[in-house]
Picture 1 (spheres, rainbow, N blue to C red):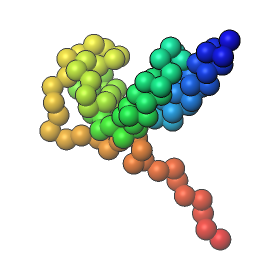
Picture 2: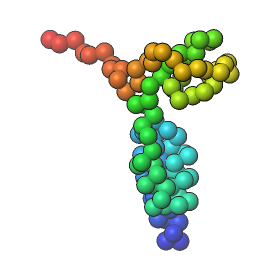
Picture 3: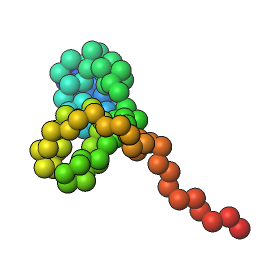
Picture 4: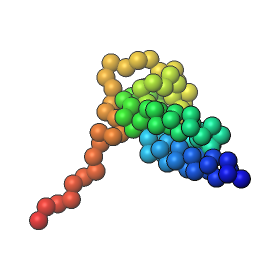
Length: 99
């Protein structure tokens, strides 16, 4: 019973870290719950998806991550682009008007 409590706590921690980094909560919950210490460390060491450069598919126009070899919408094979689009983390919400 103690292992289940520890596994759930590590699973929640890993899921929260994974979701914060732009990945799937449930995937990191399962990984961190099955192998508690290693799973949580892997979630912490995992790259931040919102900081990845992006590119536009030449066939359908969908914006995908730079490291994707195929477009997830139309399946087109993507070559390495000359120009990349800024990551999602660089885009800012419009500022509130000052008074």
